Image: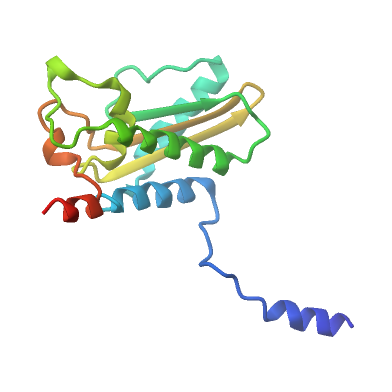
Length: 177
């Protein structure tokens, strides 16, 4: 009977391709899937940018705080949830979903300037910013919750450059032609 069970297990084929083995890689893959919806190239996981993001996630956890890193050379998205029992990859996925959800309020036809900054969409625009090419992800889970820090290089969200760097979803762009 043991042989039959081992044989049956050998024939089990996953229904979908294997996901990344770790939460950081999974986060980058999902982030790049969101970017692809806008026809924007993928970000590469960068060790230096990741070190900065992880260092800040650790700091936020240690200090039980939630604020952007002062003088950060990178663009930065932050997310925190009080739960420490949810899987860290599930929390990172939820962070990306929430940030991307800001796209519902974004006006792709309007340039963002000093006089009309919409702070309610800046996590989304950072995610799909065309001229950003590298990313770093910091994840920390502990007694005071779970922190997600995503740093982008080159920094996006530059005023007067939104039209050139935040394209509409590819399907919407094709429909408007």
